[in-house]
Length: 310
Image (cartoon, rainbow, N blue to C red; front, side, top):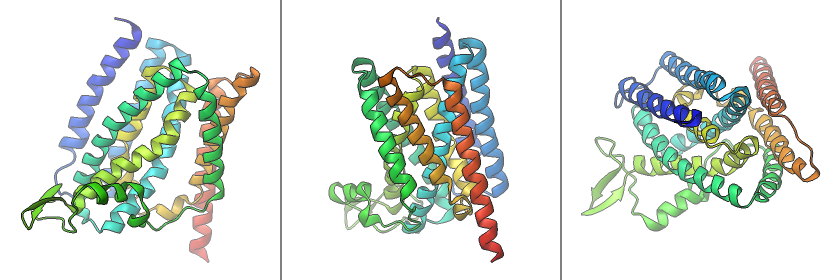
């Protein structure tokens, strides 16, 4: 077996154990997750993700490890922004807090399957048509500019959401949750998606919309399958614990969106720099990502304190 195959095998084993342990044993059905539990679960996923980077360092070399850490932090920062949309979706559909854990688990597992397919498609396209990277670069610069200039809307309107419109068009939708919180229920003899089923589908669909930005950005950092798959999946699996950790802190990270936007613009420009034979080392990308995340969170915290004191 090659070093990459050994790392992928280890990742699969760790992933299976982590899913059973965190999403299964530590997440009882219909149980409200406390802030303390959310902190421990978040630390669990972050520690596991960073530890896997150490394994890559020793097994596959420091360059690949730096690519992994850069890709993971990129995905993590985008995931935090993703969480705030998840919070708005739950509020818009008025899902009871006791159903949050189970709904998130199902939505995240669906998102993982869809992301794997999306990543496979992206890697295949880039390997056959390298010039697509430059299109990705233009797309990321444009997306980053739009994200930086646009004020994030803290209100979610289902009727304006493309995923919800798709569900309304092709599925029967119920306004009920059901006694057991099932994905489907029967009304007037017809099988319909419950309100929880709608939210699960919207979580997965929303994650794929975010993947339109994150996967091209990760491919700009590395086209190595080990890096792209593992960084993406680790970041997505940490979404549930991050949700409960950040649930009451939506307004505390008001400028994180701008930090993520700067990262996307930088990654896009890094892609386009290849046109003029300029190579930006991966460790520079890692430093820029860490700096943007740290500064945006710091500014957000200062702004939140000023608002609370006024």
